[in-house]
Length: 181
Image 1: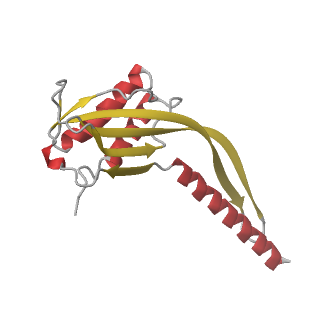
Image 2: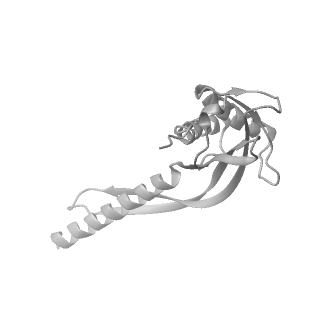
């Protein structure tokens, strides 16, 4: 009987670990980017913010947070923001906020002798994806695009949103300008 009880506890512990891993994976930010092959990124020194038509945009506060976070990263890359139409790059973004189930698993146990139990609860979380696009106004082409998921959460507090956003933009723009072969 103790062997079977041990197997049950092991199974419950395994299920709990998988649920915790899944919950952590759902929360982690994911970033992806792509760029125009052959684009000469060394010629880009200035940028201007533009609106992407028919793109999802947040309220003015979140808009300012997004721009501040991106501005900070682009500045570290040697780019200078301008309001001039003669900017080397046009930068625009759009967001999408959707809902997703989040599973929270936890376990309690006392070892083989006492048995144990595991439980999982679900909750709905907002998952925000931000898409950042960089256009060459001279060629009228998209030269770089990237997206970061689990970045915008309108129901979260402002400080947490800013930290999430800063972290996501740092990850997203880590490989800008792209290394070309």
